Length: 351
Image (cartoon, rainbow, N blue to C red; front, top):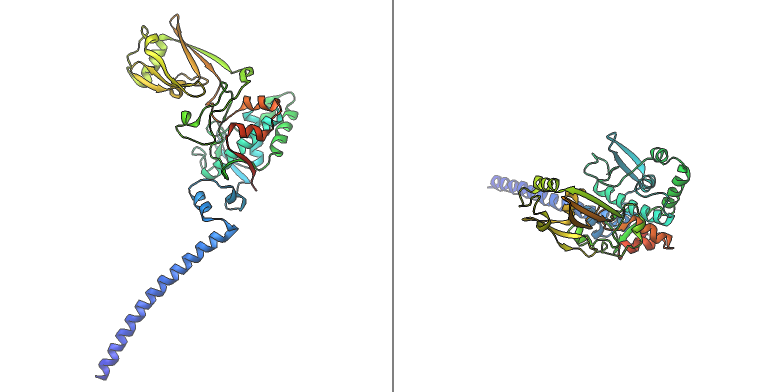
């Protein structure tokens, strides 16, 4: 009996040890996990809501200022060579401002452009450009146009040095500044060339209600070279272009004037929807179909041709570059310009 008792005792002891080891392992794993979360959360004293925003690619100025997101360098995909070039963020912004906005514009307009371009770049550092092949951003209109100093100066010719110095002043005097809304860096710092007198509401262009991209006045831009443009398209060509994209919509050279009608307009007056025979399409798609300068257009039919008269140049959402220059020349500062075009926003500096 003694041996039996000893044998049973040993069996119970081994089983108990096995169970104990399992429980200890579970408890240790839980403790390590909790400590890791606490350590990460306390690093830089960043709130958990900000960590979640970073994971979801929503930028937060606190995360950047605390060092969780670093934005001092940017990798640029050069489309011509297929190479990736790493630059400081501020040098990159200088290359964008000099490429995207005429350098003879007022310095306050250039400053506004610098802040918008920097805000766009910071977003791309987080999200990355899908065309960039491991870069943050590309140098084409797919993202925003970037041109290096040497190429930009050689293309300007006379007064190139003074023009580039002006661009550098605009960028240096706004260094680190971005556009924020409700404490966060905005994700859609859209800008374009010339408005029709009013900018567009984002919901009419991107089908998204972005609170800081609302339709606002943008007057005085009739001085811009591309404020007005016209395109003349023969009836047969018009019918062919529509058919290639949408098939047979019932239009032909003899019924265009009665079969093509504007159905509705946006707040700015741009075409929202247009009827082409049996097909309804947006003004934005019509603009793309016929390669127009804007979706603010009017149609007329004369001598076998469709005459399309456009006002403005670009998607007409966010900051108008020519409008910014008009405001600057009237005495407005860059922050006033940005806060006009991006409603409810503030300019903040990030580290």
